[in-house]
Length: 403
Image (cartoon, rainbow, N blue to C red; front, side):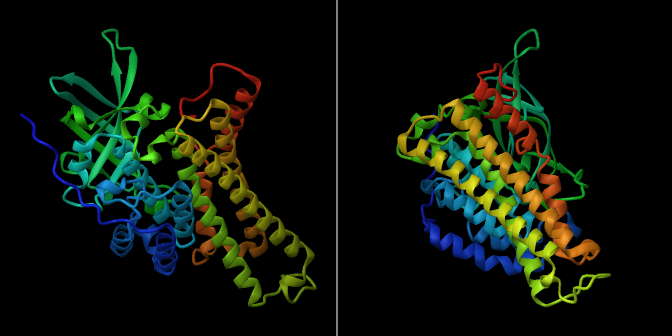
């Protein structure tokens, strides 16, 4: 007979204000290590230790498992603050925290597997059903590859998508399986222009048995159907698809803010506009216009992110899944965040001129990070527009199941 799951520590109960203060305190460290983070194509150990100890790899973990169980506004604020120091570090923190949230949808036994011995244990996540699996007595046997898998170098567990096929090989369901990293291996496949430090390599599993209590239904998770299983944990009433989109947009807010901060510092120190009459760039109307427009675009991004968070939190308070119209608008808000921050950083590079592309200038790294992230499938501004337009016009079917 299977006994009760091991007890789980409940020590981590940090307040939202404390978590945000911790994030601010880490910005200088993350900023100082940003170039090294890129060179390594993974987070330096100093970053990993600081983020892990602060609880930023488990923002989505339930309090009963030792996690902070933060409200979603705090999650977004913390990640945006971390991105002021390093976009890759913020991306890893939010992706691992998403893994913690999705793990929390499982029952007590799975939670204990992950967090009983270590409340800071991290779960990397890729829900795309790119591995294969077959049903066996008591669970599934899984083989395949998940790519990209952000933060896998710093995770103790991996959660990946697996399609379920019928006898005619048609996909009839999709599952998420939770596997210890000791039963997986990492292939070094991450070589990109931006977000290099996320170490989003490939995780490979080969004939790994996954017990039933560590298998999640992806359609149920996306539909919010696990909420009744956790009636005393309101955060699991949140729309999982909306969470994925807004959480992954949060680093863009901090990246753009950091670019503006750096540009203002450079302009404040005084520099001329070459081949012009302006010995001090701040006297140039074109510089003034670009800075004003960049700040406006960053404010626009923040306001749309805030509205998306507000809609999600209302769903949590009312304990019901958001309707399609609201979820589609959240996707549109995410697209607006990405396009606005992308345009803002472009304007700030214009202000800085060709010198902004010096490899020692942080704005060029921010630009590369944002140009990479904005093309992520769930953050795409154009796909977001299509989703929102179809929802407004009542056009079926929708173009994505992640709405």
